[in-house]
Every structure is written in C-alpha cells, then in structure tokens.
Image 1 (cartoon, rainbow, N blue to C red):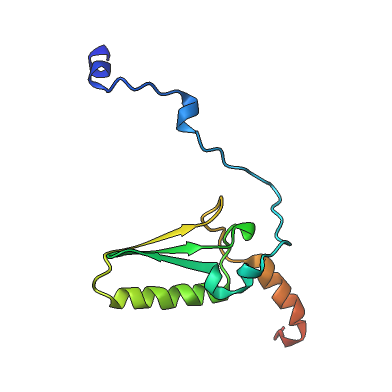
Image 2: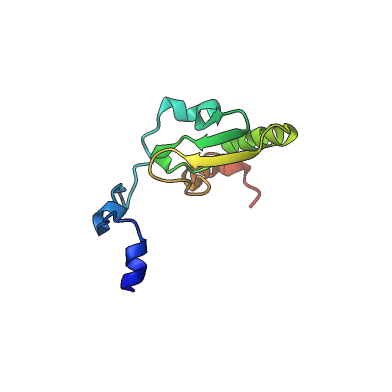
Length: 122
C-alpha cells in the first residue's frame, strides 16, 4: 500500500475539499413566488451554443426547474432542429439553481385542474 501511495501526486485532500460547494436544502420550497421571466416560455429554456455543441438550460430555479407543457414543447422543437443539423456533435441539458429538474410541475397541473373543474370528464 505504501508503494502505491508513493505513485500518487503529493496533493493533499481533506474531506472538506471534496464537498467545497455546499448546497442549500429546504424541505418546503416556496413555489408561490414566480418571476415574470418564468411565465415567458423563451426564458424558461435558455440556449447556449458553440460551433459543434448546444446547451439547453432549464431556467425555473424557484420551482426546482419543474417542467411545464410549454417547456416540453420548446425542448422538442429545439431537439428536432438540432437533430437535423449535422454540424452539432452533442447536446447538453442542465438546470439553473440548485436542482437539475424535479420532474413535471404538479403544482401548476393541480391549479389548472381546479380552475377547469367543469371541463373534467369524470
């Protein structure tokens, strides 16, 4: 084991350096606060691009980047256009804020179902 350790670089790591970026945690995020930018579908998905790559960035950090139907539709249009472009080698997807994506926006779905209660078939 000592012989193996001598082959490693002499950099010293502590357990704190491995976790140098603390992530805040809240058991009850505040979904009630909505930014005006979050209502605009163009601002919910940001796009960054270089010569041979594209990045789609989910931009709803206050709702843990939960997906809405308009976001899914925009992502599909973006991916279809990128797939047709033979110059693009890879596509990256990431989330802004502390979460990548919490899944579907069930809070918004719940509110829309309650607003359209008469339109439900059951």
